[in-house]
Amino acid sequence: QKEVEQNSGPLSVPEGAIASLNCTYSDRGSQSFFWYRQYSGKSPELIMFIYSNGDKEDGRFTAQLNKASQYVSLLIRDSQPSDSATYLCAVGSWGKLQFGAGTQVVVTP
Amino acid sequence: GAVVSQHPSRVICKSGTSVKIECRSLDFQATTMFWYRQFPKQSLMLMATSNEGSKATYEQGVEKDKFLINHASLTLSTLTVTSAHPEDSSFYICSAKTGTEQFFGPGTRLTVL
Image (tube, rainbow over all chains, first blue to last red; front, side, top):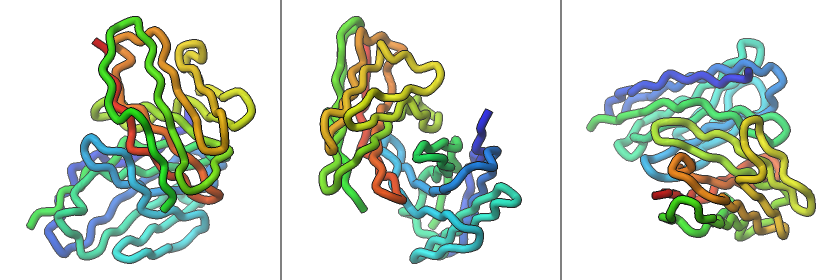
C-alpha cells in the first residue's frame, strides 16, 4: 500500500512567522513531489514541485526533498492570513499522483 | 500556470440518472488527463487516467462501467457517472499533465438526491 502521510493539524502560525509542513511517503520509486494549496470547497492550486534532493525556493515558499529519508517539506515564510488553507502533499510516479490527507494551516493576525 | 476548465461546476440530479462532466485544457494539449474524487474532509483519490485515443485505465476499486471516460481530443476528456446514486455525491476534479507539472480544474460538485 503506497502511502503519503501528513500531520492533519491545524497548524497555527502567527502572521509574519514561518510555517513548516512535513510529508513522508512510502514508495521509494516516487519520482516527483508536489505541494498544493486547497481552500475549503475549492480545487487544489499548485504551489510548487520538486524532483531532486535539496531545496527549491519560489518566492515565500521553499520545498525540501530528502529521498533517502523519504521526506518532503514545505516552508512558508512571512505567513499571511491568506495562506490559511489546507496544504496537500502529492507524490507522483509515471504521472499519477497520490495525495496526503493535507495539513490545515491557520495564520493568525 | 496552465488553465484547466471543468463544466458544470455544480450539478444536482436524481438517483438513477447519468451525469456528464467535461474537462478541458484551455491553453495546452494534454495527452493525459486524470480524474480524482474527493469526499468531505478527505484527500483526493485518483479514479482513472484518461489517455487520448485509447481506453482509460482505472484504479483498483473504481467501476469502469459506472464511471465512463472518453478522451475525445487533446483538449477534452469527459467523465460520465452512469446511474448515479447518493453515495456518488462528491467533488470530482480533473487534472491535466504538461510535461513536468499537473494542473487541476476547478472541480464539479455532484449531489445525487
